[in-house]
Amino acid sequence: AQTVTQSQPEMSVQEAETVTLSCTYDTSESDYYLFWYKQPPSRQMILVIRQEAYKQQNATENRFSVNFQKAAKSFSLKISDSQLGDAAMYFCALRNAGGTSYGKLTFGQGTILTVHP
Amino acid sequence: GAVVSQHPSRVICKSGTSVKIECRSLDFQATTMFWYRQFPKQSLMLMATSNEGSKATYEQGVEKDKFLINHASLTLSTLTVTSAHPEDSSFYICSARRGGGQINEQFFGPGTRLTVL
Image (cartoon, rainbow over the protein chains, first blue to last red):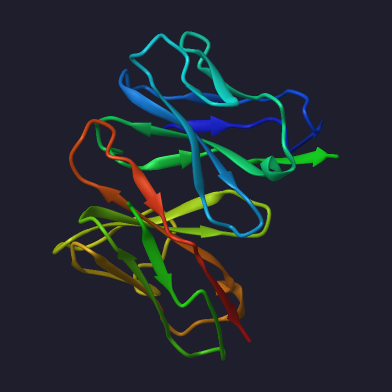
């Protein structure tokens, strides 16, 4: 079974500052994908960034970047120049590329991010 | 592209009645659709996986007779909550996986808020 753990139920950041959200995971598969999703108050799930496990280079999407440490099974999200619109619940998720759980997303518990003006 | 709709967005029903929620992929064919349940400020819990033309695969602990899933076409899946009770009140989210490509990314619907009186 695969698990995803987000140990920070809540985080806060000042506007324009940088914040890092933590995520650790466990899977027996060697090929998998990792995702960060944002869920604003509207409850619509929005993909923020994704990382293929076979890629050593950390993914980056504008102000969002990840620190992917495969050996440590760690996948943190860094938000730079935080904006008020970044306030949301953030979920880390894992999907195996194959095996019996193919296609299933396993989500972490979520981290509520508050951005202070 | 890659839009997933859900209908209705919110529904209120009396205890004992059945409620049907539709999930449609508007601009792509979905090889697989997933149904999730989410309680306030909690994570998404996978309920079942449905593939077009075949029976849904339910996660452990999910009553298949209570949560009926039909995946009639490559663009439509329905979740029917039968004989709903107040404890079934929750936020239900579907996602659709677009076939092809390496990542087979999932796209989420906006969710349906079910309230059972």
